[in-house]
Image (tube, rainbow, N blue to C red):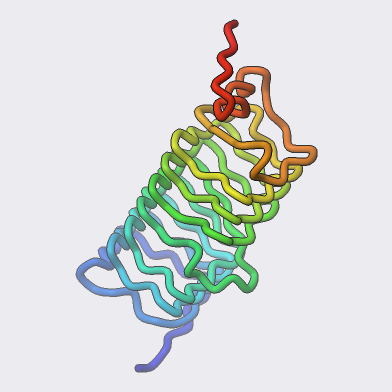
Length: 191
C-alpha cells in the first residue's frame, strides 16, 4: 500500500468512517469537523496538526505518531493513547471529552488539559509531571504510580489521588480539592 504525504492542508467535514484516511504522514494539517470514530489510524504520522470539532471516539491509535498536536472541541471517547508511538508524543487538549480513555504509561510531561471531561480516564504509571489540568472534571480517573510532580490541579475537580501511591512533589491543588487527596482515609472536610 502506498503511503501519502500531506503538508499544510485543511480537511473539512470529512467522514473517515466511510472512506478511511489514507495511511501516511500529515504535517501542519488541520482537520475540522471530521469524523474519525472507530477509524484505524494505525501507523499514521501527525506532525504539528490541529483537530477542531472532530469525533475520534474509539479510533485505533496503534503506533500512531502524535507530535505537537492540538485537539480543540473534540469528542475522544475510549481512546488508547498508550498504544501510540511514544517517540515525540506531544498533545494538548482544549474543551475535549476524553472519557474512558487510557494514558497508561504514556509520557505526557507538560501536557495541557483545559476545560476537559476526563471521567474514568486511566493515568496509571503515566508521567504527567508539570502538566496543567485547568477546569477539568476528573471523576473516576485512576492515578496509580503516576508521576504528577509539579502538575497543576488547582482549578480541576472530582479527582481522587492517593498521596502514598503517586509521586506528587510540588503538585498544586486548591483548598476545595483537598477532599480528593484524603478520600482514601475516609476523612470528610466540611466547609
